[in-house]
Image (tube, rainbow over all chains, first blue to last red; front, side, top):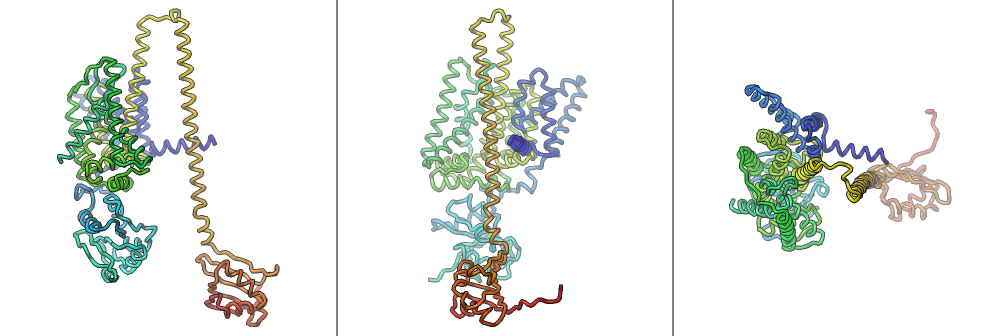
Length: 222
Length: 413
């Protein structure tokens, strides 16, 4: 039991502190804070509570030490630039830029939803208290965030349709059948799909045609 | 734009009111506005989270949430104001220094970035769903209390949660978390170059993130509106400030005692007893703390075990069904046939015997399925295929194909 507790504690600590260069950055920060704080060591050590805080305090201590130990003014500037470059390099090499394409893209609108989707969603909600929708897997989140009136057929309820939607050339017959089986009155598709036959051939009619997406509604017999 | 500015101003006024308890115990002056706004901002969000939790648990409407929230903020402000008056503190100072332009430039760049760049972090965006549900229904739910808080505010203001989070909330929250860091840095050091260097380090960390499993989802510029971000960048930072201040004031008190030339001989018996009481209370507190931490970890370990057990059993039936199984048909204790169920669920039967087994075979097959894909009989005579013929003629069993096999031994071995 004790062994498991220690193991759990260690794993939790590694989750927070990280692995490889990230863990080295944190460990180096704690050492810098400890060594550079001198008489105030006891007072300052609570900063290790938070990883970002300890790194920023280590940087502050490092600059202080550099400024104190360098007397010549020309050397001080060089030392400060060197310390700043060192800190920046350590952070940049252990992390990844939040503004890289992996994490962020330029927002098309204030709601941070792909363009056209708000209009498409309004078109569906117009006159409906609830709307059951099958849509692109990447867009489900936007539907949920936009309105709680959307009921989305997710991958676990409509697996065949989701498999087809992840393909550039989906079989619209499978998508239509799965959508009908799950009671989806609306299907919202990306314009990036290139099916052999459009969804309108399988019991759905086009009701919205935007630059990015198109909305189909199930045709019901009178 | 005007709404965003109003929300920013209102948030900071509330933070100013709620932050009256941010005095440094080791200092006599009124404190810097950075402390007041950072402590107050965290108090406001904490009040919102507590109100959101109450609202969610009790399924209260958003209007009730607002009442609880305002009461909590007001209580925090009034309590702080009374304590401040008792201590005779002056009003806090603005103290604009060279750090201010750096702070303003960094914060403005960060706010601009989060408004004009769209994050693709699914875990961050999925939280907004809770706020949208509260916004649409007007009632709290037992979900992320921070999102219930945001949803209730959206309901009150009539602003859609997605717009509120991405445009209205970015400025007050990002300014607050940077103020928290500034408060901590100013607690650690007063020298301007150090403050600027440390603050720029925080800015770099916000851009590149700290890439550990637990901290990458709470990177400020990815998810400034989440509960995790509030804990890491707000609460923990302010906790560090409080601890440093406490330790510092303790150090100052010790120094005062030394300066008063107190010798062990001067210590009275009463003082000694009090000291022992304090030490005992402290030891008890430490013991209770260790016990609490141990209990928490025991609960975590047990929870993990239960989760593992659940994961192992949840698909057990499906796995068992997915495997090939064989059942023995033995009327009156004598084996007359075998039913094979393949991994895909198809059934095959071997044997069956004479017509006298028909009733028992019917009961046997009704347990496992009456649709047999392949039926293998040992001969075309009544002795070996009588039961099969009887059930097929009755129509109670559907068979795709019947095959005759023999049990003659070959010389292959």
